Amino acid sequence: MLNYKKSGVNIDVANKTKKEMAGALKTNNRRVLNKLGAFASLYDIKFPGYKNPVLALKTEEPGSKQLLAFQYNKIEAVCHDMINHLINDCIVMGADPLTVQDAVICGKLEKEKVKRIVQGIADACKKQGCVLTGGETSEQPNVIPEGTYILTSSIVGIAEKSRIIDGSKIRARDVVLCLESSGVHTNGYSLLRKLIAQEPKIVNEKISGKKFIDLILEPHRCYYQTVKGLFRTGKVKGMAHITGGGIRENLNRVLPANLSAEIDLGAYQILPIFKFIKKKTGLGMRKCSGHSI
Image (cartoon, rainbow, N blue to C red):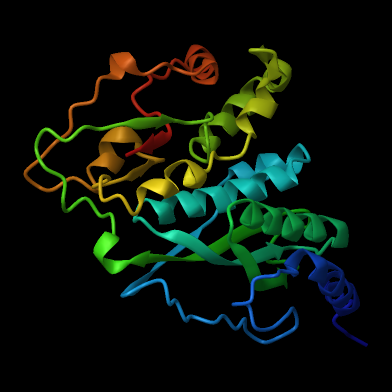
């Protein structure tokens, strides 16, 4: 006789896991109108402080970095990675983050791991002043290998329409500033995994007193607390989140068609982790992660 459990899906474990993760979704945010268990999350969208509120929407996943994160038991770190990357993409539009919905997809639901994932995502949201309102946990045996987890999430942010930062006000002779990255962030991990496969001992090599594996699994730096005070000043005309494609491909996304930017790469202080990767792979330093204003 067939049943769900024999086919690889344990509904009892799933229900127990969801019940135990409820604590991670607790919030004092009065805009959240219902709790875990509802078919959809309800969020009050009255914004009396805005004349013409505009929503900023974005979906993100932490790429193949999540494979290394689970392999080296850095689950919470990659959860912060995902949320911080999401928020960075949101704030370059001049938007404050509001809510996040996540999705955890796996071949076999392991209760303790899923609880750590949800708690990690919730903590990352709270740290930046937004809230995890819910999401989806999906167990898919024979579709995804057992032990494999795929994470993704979507964010909603809010901006005043008259203060949207989209680059349209950039003019000749405006100044480009850059905020330093914390390291590799969430790009280039297919290359790094290939490097580790070729040189397994590299994970324990030390760079500035830290193991290589610990450095490359540090969470993506979130810039929200640094830049949010600038949104209402009108002095910031364009922002670019520098990820895959580097400065050239991302900064061009906010520059008016008739303008280009002159970047003094000589002023860029290359982090030790990038120098180490260059030495090991022979790659150049043309693509660097960071956040330009």
